[in-house]
Image (cartoon, rainbow, N blue to C red):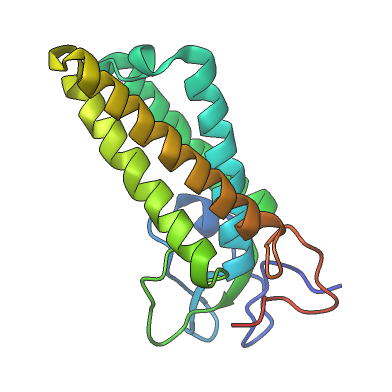
Length: 181
């Protein structure tokens, strides 16, 4: 079995200490100096696990408590350490592409990609509008809740397709390391 942290180019093991302490997602192999990154599949899995973990923490502790400055600082420190530790357990290295893409949902197509983008944008706008919600009238609160619920439904549909759909990253692959483009 191939080690997940061996350089795909030269086969030498990548130092675990560098993986945990380096900042940024681009790494260089100490032996052959090729640029490395986490594979697309492992980055998606890392983001899915971290997102679910932080979502549960926000629900358990409540958004008002987490958004206070002292708790938010500890939450961000926990997120940094948790992300580094999680990358050791879930990550696998791949050769970095020459040209990077800003496609936030690379394994989705068509309607599901649109639903995911609408869900993320709507939740962002709804979350930012929440800072001003004490100044909202009654009908504005209804619109705010409607935008958040609509965005939540879109995000859940898009996320479920991203995880379990045709090219979902939680579906087992038959000998392939990456989903087809």
